[in-house]
Length: 514
Image 1 (cartoon, rainbow, N blue to C red):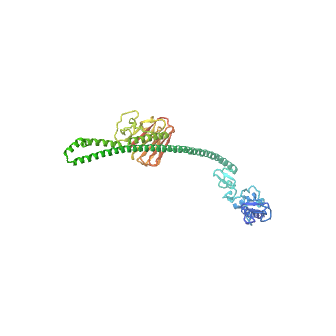
Image 2 (image 1 turned 135 degrees about the vertical axis):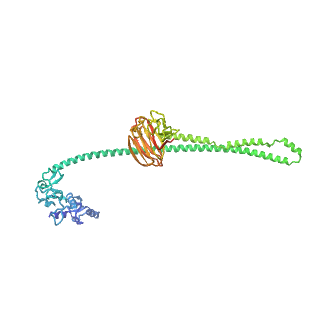
Image 3 (image 1 turned 90 degrees about the vertical axis):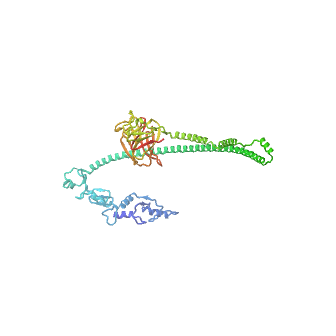
C-alpha cells in the first residue's frame, strides 16, 4: 500500500524513527538530519564517506521538500482515516465524509460536488450544521450565522434572506480590507510618532550633552576662579601677618631698650638711696632727670598702647573687601551664564489690592483681613482678595520666590494687565488671561488656567515656592523648594501681553522673598 510505502520512506534506517526533517542522499536513501550528521562525523579522514545502507562516495545532503511536507503533516497528527494498518499523513479532508485522505485514497474518492475537499483538518464538525448534519453552504443575514439547505427549506431560517459564502466572504473581505487600511494608516501614523519621539529623544540627548558640557565648563571655571581668589586672599593674609610681625619685632626691640634704660636708672637710684653723704645725694639728684612723674608715665603708656594696638591689628576690612569683590565677579559671571534675572525689585502694587487684602509696609507681604481695609478707589483695584506686582515682564527669563502660610487658601501665578478686575472672571486662573497654582490648607496643589483645574499628585513638603518665567519660550514653571527641589507643574502658552505676578489670599498670607 501507498501508506506503507510512505511510512517506509519517512522512516530513518539509522534510528528507525519517522523523519521530522528528512534528508535525501545521492544513493536515494533518506535519513533524518541528526543521524546523517552523526554518521558523517564518524567518517572523517581518508577513504571518503559511505552510506550505512550502500557503500558510495561521500553522500550529498539534499533536503526532500516533498517528504518534508509529508513529515510536517505527519507531525501535525492528521492521518488518513482509511489507512488503519499504519498511519499515513493526510493530504486532504472531505467535509461530506468527515474524513481525511492520503494520496492513494484521494484518487478513488468521490468527485461529486457535494464532497467538498479542504486542507487537512481535525475540525470537520464545524463545517456541518449541528442540527441537520449537512454541509454549511449559505449565510443567514438576519441571524448572522452559517446555515445548510435544510435550515433554509424547513428549519429555523425558513424565509430568511440568505447569501452564498462567496458573496458574504467577499463583503467581509472588503470590510476587513477597510479595517486593514485604517489599521495600516494608524500603524504608519504610530511609526511616524515613534520616529518623531526618537528624533526628540536624540535631540534631548544632544541638548543634555551640550548643557552638561557647558555646566561642567562653568563649574571648572568657578573652581579656577575660587582657587585664584583663595590664593589671593591667603596671600593678603600672609602679607599682613608678615608686616605686623615685623612691626611687632621693632616694637619689642624699642621696649627692650626702654626696659634696659629703666633698669639702669633703677640701679643708679638704688645706689643713691644707699649713700650716706647728703651732699652727694642732692648733687646727683639735681644733675639727672628721672622718669618719676605719674603724668609722664601715663602719657608714655597711652602712646605705647596705641602703637601696640595699631601694630597688632590685621586689616580685616581689606580681606573682606577682597573676598566680596572676587565673589561678586564670580557671581556676575554665573548670572550671565544662567541668563535669569532674579526679581529682587518685585513689590506688591497696593493700588490693585482688594479691600480684604492687607499689604505690609515693605510691600512684600499680602495677608487676608476680615476687616475692610478701605483702600482708595482706583481703576485697577480688584473686587476680591487679590493683588498684582508693581512691575511687569514682557521678555526674558525671570525668577522669584514666594513664602506661604500653612493654613488657608492662596493662589500664586501671573496674569495679563487686561484681566477683569470685578466679577467671577476676575479670579486668577478662572480666565484665559491668567495662570496660577493653588493650595488649600496645606493639603495638595492644583493648577488652574481658563477655569480648567488640574489637581497635582504631590503632597505639600514645604512653604516656599520658586516661580520661573521664560517669556519667549512661553513657559511658566512652579517648583517646591524642599530638599531636593521638586518640579510641580509647567504651563506652556504663547504670551501676547506683558505679565504681572499675581497673588490671592483667603485666611492666609503670601510673602515675596527678597
